[in-house]
Length: 299
Image (cartoon, rainbow, N blue to C red; front, side):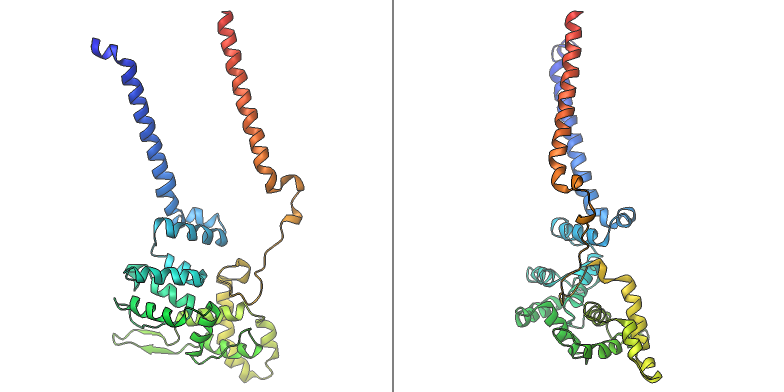
């Protein structure tokens, strides 16, 4: 017991430091690692943030924490040439990018490029995409999509032309089915092709109501009706105002909020104001400490 009493201060100090290190390490691991990488699958976090913020966070999280299953859909819909090259770089490093178990990396590539160099989902998928990039690395994403649409019978123009609207709507409204060997049915027109047909229309000067009003015969209206309905459904899920997955035919629309903000609340004032607040709190605590110490001396 005397040994413990003699070393009481050292033991308590050591225990305190160990608990502080443990608590700080656990806090950092939980808040900066576990919660940070899981926030995009937290419904409360997702519903309280815009899609644009979700995409900004996703682009930071994927290289930092790794690729999650649903990232295949996010990157496929909103990614650009850089993300296509990032995925193919993973393939070159030996990663299998095919199928559900690998996070739908191959599906993301199809949606970004409107290309499908390999129809299967096996170990050779990576090799096909690596070879595809060697041939197409000097093209832009718009050129990739143009070439992909051409493989499905639609010739589009760069920059977009009104002549593109009709063929794209026919492709978008194609409801033809095919029967697989197991008896199941699936669309003949792949979803990644329809998605790129949709956003080619959305990001050009296409106006669905104006287009419908120019149709002078009921027969024409019936032909384009499935495409117009499909366009409306997709536009509800992916409107241009979200500024996500936009094809750069024209500048991205940004709302000018600065003109509605008081000049006293602009962001450039936040840092100095926070410094003043911190200094005032620090000085206040200092005065209180000195006052308490002065009172003890008098006593």
